[in-house]
Amino acid sequence: MSSDGQGGGYRGRIAPTPTGFLHLGHFVTFRTAWQRARSAGGTLIFRNEDIDPQRCRPEFAAAALEDLRWAGLGWDEGPDVGGPHRPYDQSARFAAYRVACETLVREGRAFFCTCSRRDLAEAAGAPHDESGEPLYPGTCRARAARPADGAPVALRFRVTDGETVEFVDGRMGPRRFVAGRDFGDFVIWRRDDAPAYELAVVVDDAAMGITEVVRGEDLLLSTARQLTLYRALRWQPPAFFHCPLVRDAEGRRLAKRHAALSLRELRARGVRPEELPSLVGSGVADG
Ligand code: GLU
Image (cartoon, rainbow, N blue to C red; front, side):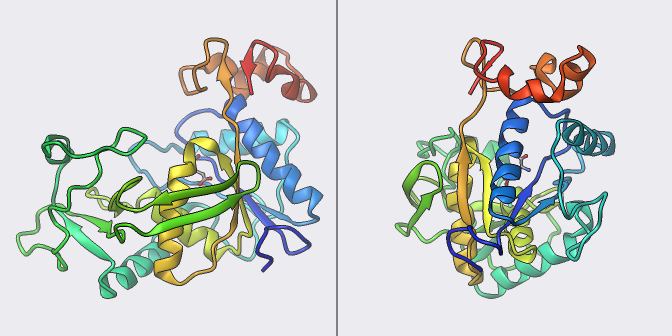
């Protein structure tokens, strides 16, 4: 595996979460992933990140495949084309996530956490990370076993306070984070018995041999958390390339409320796929 994500062994991925229709912001990130895989002569994987049973819907997963194909993107492995790492739907990969959790518990890197969101919000004076989340105050850090009363528990990864996480981003250059200051102990298995994003994405990127992760800049802090998981699991991390976020005319990040900028809606309005790149930065949406 090449350490900079380049070369013929390049393996990239596009990994949408099917909680709504894809918009121009997703298109920009996924087109960058597609271009980087193509220009490296590598392989691109489509992975459907449908781990959240509350929020994900099969019709959005089907729409993502269809809309990205309409937009001119293609992939070499995925739910619709198969491949050596199937299944490509995260909802069918829970066994692998459980194995990683068991390893982390066994090695004393994860603990059982009974804190509710309210408990965390109320932890007096708790410092917050840059996304506004309170840093985990450490309440359950010593709980190495599941509580006997069957109370709902999350599993949290115990970060090493003061550990530095450094990487050279393919677009943004050197980045540095400090565990325990920039982010705290984070959930890897949720109280409602589903894997958390940070864990699932690391397990799959490692299992699928991904050499470079292309994602939005809003996930920089997640990348730092994920690098601590790679280290704890003794897996080789991929390279990272964080894309700029697309904003609306008021400077707000594109989100589900921007239905008018969904690929589906643009297509219905007669926009042609080759016109999509020119809509970004045109006043409709800014890159
Ligand atoms: N599936 C996640 C998303 O759509 C993250 C993808 C990633 O890890 O790059 O935001």
